[in-house]
Image 1 (cartoon, rainbow, N blue to C red):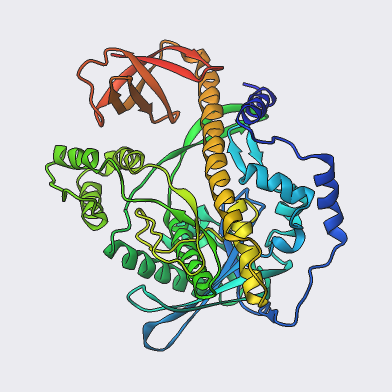
Image 2 (image 1 turned 45 degrees about the vertical axis):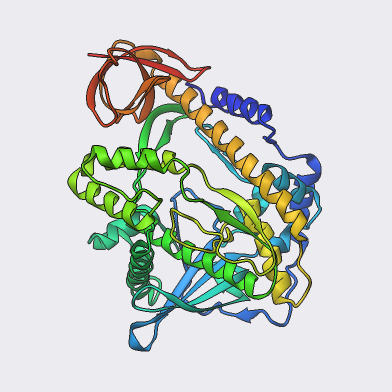
Length: 483
């Protein structure tokens, strides 16, 4: 399948859901003009360029939003610093770039490519924390105790310098014992000690949250593989040790951000996941595995069940995780009134959580950064509570639209990929069995289709052999029969 054709399908899908697939000329001109606009440098900006900052992201990522550095303290505690790119300094509130970002509210990641929230001259250049480039950032400084609790935190602005751009895959390999996977260790003094300490810190933070019910799930998504502009495969993009490490650090930083704004008496945007409405379905799922859950939602009990299933059935755990995630339902953005606390995230086991660590990619994070900078400067909030209510509603809506576009394009890509394979058989797992249909997921390529024949008696988790019957790429339909 030709990538340009798939991209046009993505463009059409975005337009149909109220998303802008391209930047207006005024936005591009404004972004280009930012090359000649210096960041304002107030006197309270600290100079932290000497620290051993580094980033970990995908190997093809160019919009780097955060760096981190840490140091051990007495008694087994550690000081962790997370630097978040100062995107607000190059994106004028109310300007053309801000207007585009406030409509889409997120970068859209499709099998046809990325539709960035900000023009690339900003997100992959001027506001990206590139290796070797001095940048301004908002710092979240936290003191982490050996038990993983964050006892104190403070926020401030600073100049930073990324010493090493690392990738998830290579860091995971190195942490797993592959000494040759990180040549940067010989080039950046102290980097090895930093990675060791970060790995320890992440484990401590994760353990603290899991003891309070953070859910131990593993989900698998498909990653399109192109060769010479042609889609050739859909492979599993799985979690790894380095991805978990960064996720744990960002969860801690987002919690500290929410608490800081509450202490300042500021309104804020929060990420909220309520206790599941359909807890009875999760109870029934656990009962099918011989486990009795409490009658009321209990994150600790649910995580204990998940941990047991990971050990008992590691091969089927990703599919079980997917079912649990679907039953929990999606998170949403909400506006928190000044000083509000305890707007919790059920899946993360945190009571206060503000998206703040990816302002190049998410509009709520840019809004939060403006609130933080206003609070640090002793100014009134950059947004009134009433405005945040509307922003939260719109961001939740557009996030759902972006997800739908991404799924639609992925299904189309899978359909095109399978057009020449009618009649082939595949090993699959049943991922859904309901009156609306029975669905299976193949492992290679990683895609989902409908079991239209031989679905009788098939249940979620069953391993089956299926034959491809038909595909409709435009509609994203892939039909199988059971052998």
